[in-house]
Image (tube, rainbow, N blue to C red; front, side, top):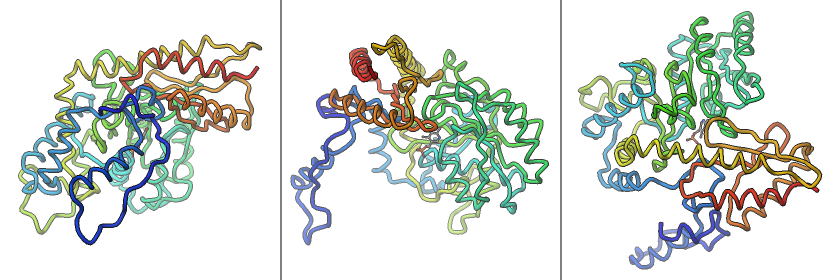
Length: 434
Ligand SMILES: *Cc1c(COP(=O)(O)O)cnc(C)c1O
């Protein structure tokens, strides 16, 4: 985007164009003027100071593919509505699942976002465990697991306390001892466990739950392991980053969000299963108005969505444009920016010697807050510092961790350079209480 460097990451509220269709359709130049108004008010992920969220600038190959998807207007609901794209979907997801260690037969289904991938995973897990008619069943995850799991409980009609959040260690990772105790506890209570959800890349600090230990517990209790890798799974694609997400391939199901760090245009999420037949076992209805599928099941029978855009094309073209070297460069850059910022912030001291408390992990996320602030002091410090940062065209987010507000940087934007990181550290240094 030609103006990405000059427009602020977060624009001021802008004028809105007319809303309702007029009696006569508008001419192209009028439509363009109206479009401009909307674009001027848009969030600008391409600005080098855009570090608040998991939404990087869009990869050009995926933008092109998005236009082509719209123009082709195929429908992966059924193979005769998207012959080549359905084949591409099956082949690419098979490759992805295999590359991430889920085995030879693994495959999956694309979804409009990670929330839907997580939901479908849990519905499959419930079917595989034969617990469809047990509203008292529970799902175990950590305190830091994503809010989309709460929605899944609601949609699945489970009890109000069905999502059991377990303690994390000081690094923000699910504690396997707490998990072992919980598995025993719920068994004694007579409430079956649908699945354990481990997170590979938590939303605030990018922590990775200890997957090998968790997988071993799941195996011994015969419980499905879903790994929410919406943030972290892409690190499993590249050999020298794999050690950041050890044990990814032990999952029964895995959520991957290429719309996050890789910059594939929204939406791009996939759910991968070690045994993909559970998708059709769970969701197939038969499509009486369609010819039978050539390769097993129609796309619309392998997930919750019926008609959907052929989003696989964006992922395919984006990954082919990057190559493994391009993917590696994105991951390298993101991790390097996080460790550089971590180092800059670690050196900061207030005049009275106060330091920052940093929350991070092996990925590209970092949250921080001055040591020793109480809840209300953290609220005013974070609001004021966020405002000062915005004046410098640096956008951070402001998550609440327990009862303390932090500032959070997501270092996935390849346009963010050392200049921005040093400026950020300067503003934060000036914000430390005297
Ligand atoms: C972003 C995210 C999700 C949800 O993905 P959406 O695409 O926003 O629905 C799930 N889990 C984790 C850990 C995430 O960071």
